[in-house]
Amino acid sequence: MRTLVYSYQWFSLFFLIFSLCVSAFNIPRLGIMQRTHQHEPARTVSSSDSPGDDLKTYYYTQRLDHFNYLPESYATFHQRYFVNSKYWGGAKSGAPIFAYLGAEAPVDEDIDVVGFLKDNAPNFNALIVYIEHRYYGKSIPFGSWKEAMRNATTRGYFNSAQAIADYAAVILHLKTSLSAQNSPVIVFGGSYGGMLASWFRLKYPHVALGALASSAPILYFSGAAPRAGYYYIVTKDFQETSMSCYQTIRRSWSEIDRVAKKPDGLSILSTTFRTCKKLSHSSELKDYLDSIYASAAQYNNPSYYPIKATCEAIDEAAKKTSNNILGQIFEGVVAFMGNKSCYDMNKFNNPSQTNIGWSWQTCSEMVMPIGHDKSDSMFPPEPFNMKNFVKDCKSLYGVLPQPHWVTTYYGGPDFKLNLRRFASNIIFSNGLGDPYSSGGVLESISDSVLAISTVNGSHCLDILGASPSDPQWLIMQRETEVKIIKGWIAMYQADLLSIK
Image (cartoon, rainbow, N blue to C red):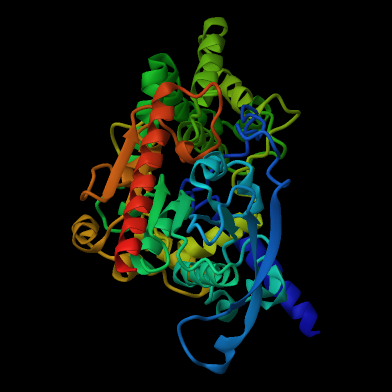
């Protein structure tokens, strides 16, 4: 009977998350790469060997709670990490350690995508370690994902502070086991992982010499980022690609509403957009299209430019059927998602481990108030409503979000001033075409807290694997980052020598 009760509770939570993810939590997803459209290239990087060839998998016995001394805090779980020692110069030479901090996904999904570490490790003679975030992948407390997410008690250990304490424990364990006390550590992360990398350097400067935080929208927590900034940049990206495409998209929302009001309107929309299931409400279609446009802008990689592909399809359809706005929009869907027998309107919100986990993190501490403004946008007005957000989180998890805890714990509300006063050795990299750059650090704070941005860059582009087709501006961005990191290591080695 107890098992049946637990199963019912899990099913109820699963259903609620699925329902709310397409309503109150319609906040653009973070993540290194978007994996839901047809234009994503094969996961190849410039390094010739496959990512698994030189990797060894380890499990560290991690403490459940780093921050109190209650008996239950000493419970443990196995945290997964991968090590590539192919390029390492060894402990005796003080060769550095590159540590990739996993984010809201199994870390092995990122290894062959985030090529920056592997591409540059030979030049640094660096050891590479990839550490998985607790509650994701195979680093699950309480024995199983179902048990870990079962109630507020088990979910209570699922937060960023515990995660970066995990990273510190793994890195210190690794340095001890390798007798590499004099090997400087550089941490890397992108998106949410980029936030973790910057926060790790702030909280554990004795563990990490420096951090590269790629596309880390940390200013959303201090209130410095405009709530409509994300969608303003999405709109700008589409305008700069094709003004006619932008105008078609902007007109399409009212056309969807007009058709939906017809007696058989939802059936017409379902047929027009070839949905896998009949629409229950026009908002399902709107949220789906919103996610496509946001993803195209956020991951507008120069190797395939999804905005261009989407807009070319919309504009080409307009030449053939100028009066059929929804038909034109559908051709954009096909261009982005690929030609499918049907299109799942919940594609971006299916309750995967990542979506369920991030839903909890969003409802607890990662509150980023992103919405549509009333003007300067190709989207219909839909401002972020904190009151409704709190209500839905309370309904789902029984806890209240803490939107100001991030700035309390990591520094704020004037985060830039705090960075100037006590931070060092952090690179904040951004592509200005990335909508999340609206919440990024775009100006250097000091001589060692540096902002590097590119006009045409997209989300986390700089830490992806290098490619022969990379534009010169991207090559130069990475070269600048490498030069800065070399400077940190040279200064560390000089300081170490002078102390000895």
